[in-house]
Length: 353
Image (cartoon, rainbow, N blue to C red; front, top):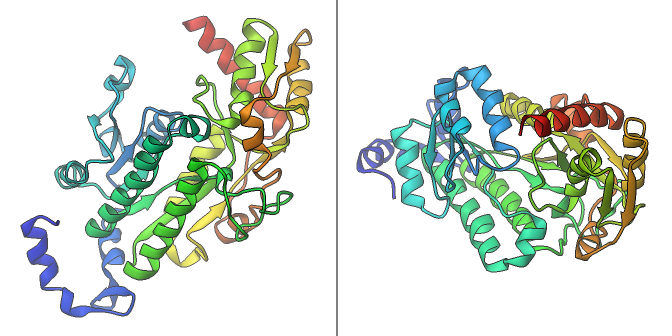
């Protein structure tokens, strides 16, 4: 429920609600509230200790100031994270706790990263249902109540074996075979529904495998992260996918920039609320070839496991032409630039540890 003060304010405006979006003096409630926070929004990042959270927080803090970007999770932060800017405990399953955070910290945007990834989710389906589905419900309803701008990422895992795989268009059949994929399709549809029914400024990007110099976190595409650590440490890597398994990928620098560019795009330019975005597609064999230009002695073996079945149901090539046409998305990193950057960053990280 809304706080009493907010209820009193809304009660005076409810009589002006008509159609699918609330109107107030010729503007939607969202449009009115968003004008005051577009230039310097206060942003809450949930699940911020995962792969995307720290780099996204750093990126946004450089644009909007350290104090305006609040990291949150249920995990104790490292000293480095704790000293880098505001960090709070936030359980996405605790709706009242989230309400308190939004009110006390005057939040304008939520970037919702909390989720169990594909391989981890298959090992604990009940927990994945709670975190990925109930957690998404909570932030969607919260954003509706407080008229927040909400970003919720989706994935290539939102597609299934019945989907066209090369290329996979923005709108097509989606019948994922993992709880991770099912939860993401559910979140996409709920967010679109809340947009069309209540005027929620919901924004969602379907990402490919995201590659960064952080250790792998349990996703099916994480072989493309682990291989750099093993290449530099042992010059030997056992891949859990077949050598010809083609999957779309993106370097994390492109990923975080895509989120921000999408978030600041005016609503009138958006023809959809869910877009595919990608940068490149490659196979493990092609990635090994690119790495061997820098580490010629790298040896690789292939031992496909259950993750192969997941990968076989996912897109090989993502069609992101709508994102490129509607709001100007373009990537900066191809496979060669990705490999050069990853080898440098992973080597520096290993030497520093």
